[in-house]
Length: 628
Image (cartoon, rainbow, N blue to C red; front, side):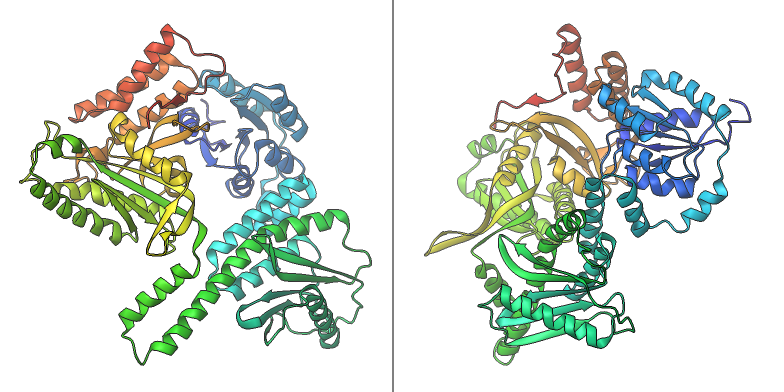
């Protein structure tokens, strides 16, 4: 590599951590300065800050696909000269079509074997590309934010992508804001990017026949025009909800009256639905005649459909807060605070017999408990279980979990119901790691252990469940049911197969991937299910990096993980021999530290079978578990 290319900047758009690591390592070795974006939207933003001289992008990515990000960059005069190489694992003609339509300069199939070919093409582009005005890109970059990107996407990309982008920002808004008022104001701000929302009102049915009215006079209409608009909206609300007798009204104007004296020529009213029922109305006015064309209405409807459940959830939280305040006020003189808190909790859970919630479900089971119970006195076994459950239960409760039930030697716990947690998946993993550490403190003096010693397996899944009181009038249990629970139980069961302490589903991994150490164990179809499920082992620390007295089952070698991940990626590409070399290295590193790497050994064995009996063309590296 000569001095001309020593400081050339290459930006990679790639969502796969494994492939991105291999590609960036290759480019770094060639002397390039590299940056990485995990999706097309982040890639567009980084183009204006990293100022690349060449872009390598995947086609298939979340949020913005590679060709969509390329189309936007190639549509702007400042970024158009930057060469773009489409780098994808899909060799289909449709990907080449999208790449060429977006303006990509070159297309190459994604594979480590093509790195040399990629290097040649990069050098050719960097030597022969037209000059790029990076000063202009810097100036434009100062104006780039989420709102400006929305406008760019709306003008330059397809409508569906525009709608997806705005809905994504709406989801971010719902996480950041805590009150109904703040949320509605944020919705108003985003709505201005959907259409020319000069004046807007949202009317929401609240408890005790009250009405919450929020208005945003963005264009500064005069007070007279704004009041006339509000009168029309109230009349339309009363017509739409004829049986709703408003007793009290809460009104908040986010923007005061101005001097705009133009007539409102266009007006629409749209209802907001939650669980199939109308609970609010949105009213939008504009001074342009016949402004609300079909494309504008389509964007508004898509946006409001996404906003409705978020607003409804904020409304429900406010109503629960109001109920708790009233309950406290009524009982404060008669009931101690701690007892009152328990009353409020029970009244909240019993007020809704069942509901759909997104929760994390944890199952834990003692390994070889059948053998332990066969060789242990019954009373000693009960004493041991009570001590064990007490220790494990404390670790679960410490992370906000709710112990649902004890099933023999198993524990079932819920994270996210009845108490809502900021990240139920992360809380459940923290609890699982605490449980794994606490196993060393379990007193096993009175029981007979098998040769393998004392241990437990933990499985966690995250998803929708039906939550509520289940049973009959004399005996009700607050519990969760559904496929999420069933899969969590099965994940605990496969910890024995993969010889791992903690196995979580892909949903859990996706929600907490940045907070813990994960290693993908497999992709499986469990018995009774058609869809593949990614399985991930969880670890507390890297060996030699603060692992202290942690049990070996939750400690991993950093270098071994890197080699394993590369091997797994190549395994899915059917690069058998190269993959086996990486798995061999991972296993050797672990064994050198005194550990056992069963997963690497498992894949080495599978590779041997695939070499002898090559898998079919539609092989997707997924296995089917035949046992529950």
